[in-house]
Image (cartoon, rainbow, N blue to C red; front, side, top):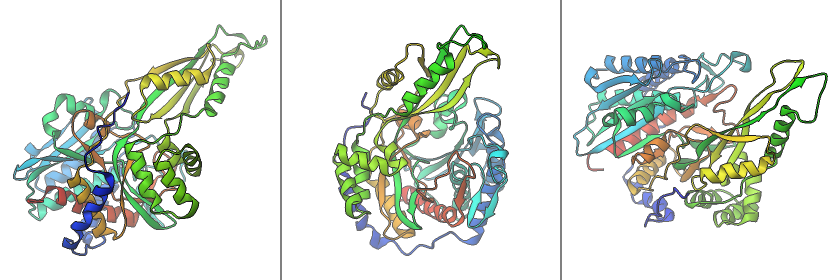
Amino acid sequence: MRILQKRSSFSFAFLLGVYSLFCGAITSAQTTRPETEKQLARAIYKEFVEIPSGFTTGATTPVAEAAAARLKAAGFPDADIFVGGASPKKANLVVRYHGTGARKPILLLAHTDVVEAKREDWSVDPFQFLERDGFFYGRGTGDDKAQAAVWIANLIRYKQEGFKPDRDIIVALTADEEGGGPFNGVSWLLKNHRDLIDSELALNEGGWGEEAGGKKLSNDLQVSEKYVMNFRFEVRNKGGHSSLPVPDNAIYHLAGALERLSHFAFPLKVNEVTSAYFKEMAKLESGSRKADLEKTAEGSQEAMSRVAAATAAWNATLRTTCVATLLEGGHAVNALPQLAAATVNCRVLPEDSQEYVKSELEKAVADDQVTVKLLGDPHPGPASAMRPDVLQAVRRATEAEWPGVPVIPTMVMGATDGAYLRAAGIPTYGVQGFFMDRDDIRFHGRDERMGVQSFYEGQAFLYELVKLLAKPGN
């Protein structure tokens, strides 16, 4: 099933060069916003991070209520603020800043739920906002409360300065992006209150700045993404007494299946977006790495093999991936297991169909005792068109903040709520301006953190970007 949209009549190369026509009109921008604005963003950031909004054990409603309180204190009327969701614990916030209405609104999206974090797994308290050694630590500092805090802080600033855009600016802070399911905020809003978030385009997470060795490499613009498929590998058995073991053991069947999965890999390939990405990345490299990236963009299998082996991120960009993430099995220490099961999480290339992925996994398992069952309802979405106005604005804001840093179109290896919006006809672009070391991305992991300077630079970048996309005559 092919879900990428038809190729635009504009080439990526042409679009990437258009920004130079506009750079002369840009005055030198300050690296960060004024101190009072920075402190407001930091205070909101701290407040959000210290609310334990874990997907399973926490609640997003307190985050939505905290944001609403900030907005009301800044003079936003109650009529322009909505708090609600599919569950009392899973509320979303939607706020509208009115423009002239000359153009359809722009939607600024961020999710407020986070992946669970256990104190015993971290070197610091995951729900204590900590500034140390040039970083902000805490669950959600990177994914995705930094962007949520910046959207609110910048919106308050637009109101304070009397900015009059030619389109409404809508901010939506939503629930349950990490787990999806019945309480997902974007899905719920589209079904129940589409009028609140209906827009011409959306800005979201999914694209960030890449650094290596302290050097800024690129400010990535996410225009497509993989989609998620979760499978349950399950073995059931009659069991028996542990004193009478037999080869037909549910745990052994499952272990064998997972061992074969660990050696299995989906084919390497590029699509329109990833080909453009590797072509642009080649411009930042030299020697054999440069040649491999250029050939990868052209679809060379040999080059793709070397590039995939170079980094986990490039490997995930070039193929569908599936990995075991949860295990369960057995029911007593002195009994043969009657059940053994594993959850396998797949991040699927947009062009790979659900049927194809499932059939390939069944072949890899190669054991009729192991059932492979799809969990949930996957949500593949089309790529967003490479709109010249969006690219120009991102390039202009990037050049003003980090002169010489290229903007590169990407397909994010994970998945975001942008898939729901794209499927509903709202083009969505992942862009944040938060730069991170590409070899130290801690989303979903231990000691998640965000660089202090990176946060403040991202605040300034997003402030300018939204103005470029919403100001009159732009």
